[in-house]
Length: 387
Ligand code: ATP
Image 1: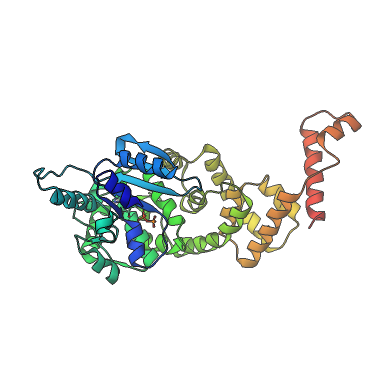
Image 2 (image 1 turned 90 degrees about the horizontal axis):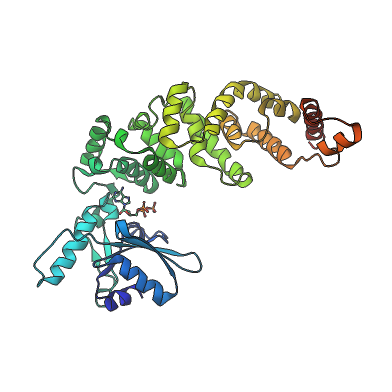
């Protein structure tokens, strides 16, 4: 259908990037990126009109999202038209245009396109031996300034490498190491780095990518005072085991914050402030981080010795998912289970009858620390009884 719309708009239309890569690898992928040679936004509007969908255009980037009623989304971009041939030779201009677009991409495995217009439907456009790299499991940049142009590609390289069990081609690896040590990653905004790390955290097995980043000495270019050690790796392994439980229990649980609790351990105040400015952590998160660092050893020992929940509660205070995630990195499986049942008990314990209001009316107590202490005591009693 998209190809027919292309014909109706007189534009060559391609599906590109990750979709083509995964199609060749026979892996499901519902992220459809369309490139239009012509006007991508006009094309998106036309397509949306025909299919009763909504368009969100980004005029500045010549791109648009087409969003269908069921939530399905297609990204439409315009092939950049910096490249001009004489107007008479239209087909060549077409090919050159998609070629240029593909050349600007991150790696060869992501730089193929499939044409969708009916007359050429299904034709693969592979200008840079991409399919061969894909078959051989090679991550290769398209040109030697690739990491300089966009240093976040260094993080992406690791992500694709680890996701598919591929290897970076030697020259690409050399470029990466060189550009990394020339501190190109430091020039990128924190939000873009954070986005790429978040994509790693969405992978099936993020620990593999974290390990590889450590091996390439990349971590210190992202978290400057972090020294990756075997102990840190163990913490990540335990943390990643526990995260799914926290996600079930806490809405909007943020994996980036969770791993940051480990990356940012033992940071001094001023570096933490720098990190907050760079990656946009809330102030409260930094406070939590400092707080947890001080309680982690005592809480671990309470859990190890299976102390009553009220004792843990007196140290941990109100539920905060990042205290829990941080602590979980220090616990073995049985201890994590104990922590989990503690968390569930805290989340499900309510003082129903004897509320603050009830105490004030029944005993003429005033709101204040005494009343709060009584309520906390009651809460603790209930915690232990519901265990
Ligand atoms: P995933 O399966 O993780 O979604 P993807 O390849 O679709 O992988 P996206 O980040 O959604 O990844 O990017 C879509 C496409 O856009 C990529 O296939 C790639 O061609 C291109 N792309 C994305 N980011 C960059 C970048 N930093 N530099 C160059 N090309 C990029």
